[in-house]
Length: 538
Image (tube, rainbow, N blue to C red):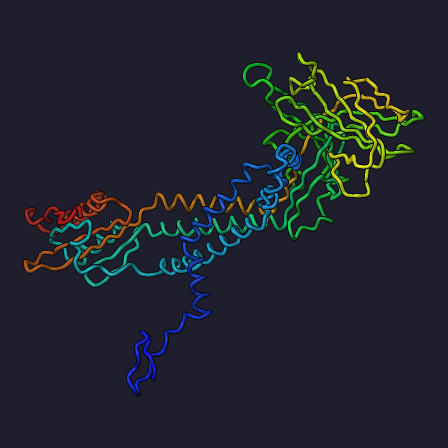
């Protein structure tokens, strides 16, 4: 005995109905493609892309400033590792952000390109045929004239200048404003081009961060960067061969009021060469005033202090003499932390952890703090260590590994010119001065002009969409039983609100006036009757 689909027994000799088949693999693929390329999906992905960019605006990013990321790790030791697991310090190069970006690109391409092809065909198509009942349009008017139907249609064609006109029997069908949809398509194509340009810049360009102390130089080579983020197809062995030097840096701070201590200006005087054989050029680098060298933009990101130290060994020989960049804890006072590593002492290696106070002042509790970000009364304190610095293992220049090292104690508060004699005859450290440094970012993006062009095209397409109004006008002229010609005119505005038919009424009035002026009738009482709006608001 067989059973039916509902589970009831089938009659003897009756064949059970076949079970319906699924849509299959091709059906699921077709459904997935249609869902992905729908405008709703594109809007959702665009929204997700904007939401995904929020952490990149709120949290410090490695591509912008590694120092700020390190500071965030020090201030939030429990939260920062979790954020780093989700690549929230490298949002714009993270896999999840790239996935949203790629899906959005595919969605827009699948949505916009067929739409652009369909609109290109529509631009070459003839206007739609004249409707049978023109009085059903939002605007409809009728009047009579002694002019022949051919004359009426010829005059109608003349007043419809700027319209695309097509003759259908005893009527004309015309339309204008069809470029509004072209503006819409242009906007979406430009958005697609903008995404492609940004992707090309990420693949073929690079970003890099470096720190330069006053008086020092920089050569655009891979080892010279503190951090570099090349594109997947960037040849890092063939970077632009420019060099530059930081001649002077000056930071100005607000002196009084509630904003005291905030920076009012940063100015860096730079000397650069586009190539070893090129002439030397000068540039004053400021915030939002980058330096462009051989297609590479250099931006001023921040600044800090680099105290200068001279370290001598037990025999009095100088084993270290240079400025050491210190990273500031916060910008209100620029209290900064830094590390000195002295590997070449002839004996055990030396390491120091220091705190720099630009404007030192003693509190009522006897603690030394900085009260202003400018270097008005610079002081520094050091903690010394002796042993193996562990330089054979990768490590940050701003961190000192003290495991396996012997502590030498803390220095007194040192001002410029003071010397700290290390215990056990290990040598001495002299605080000799203070220089400033700047942190710069290089940005090479060859697709920048294409991105700009796409942005301009997107704005142009948006303006066309906003200000071009698509409209259709139909004119029919037929001979009446009394021998006079009945002229019907109807209008349809796709974007106007109900009742906004002033333009159509003006066309009707102009057509009636033309036919009146061109009438050859000697009897002035037989002139065309005034147009009657049969349906001016619908």
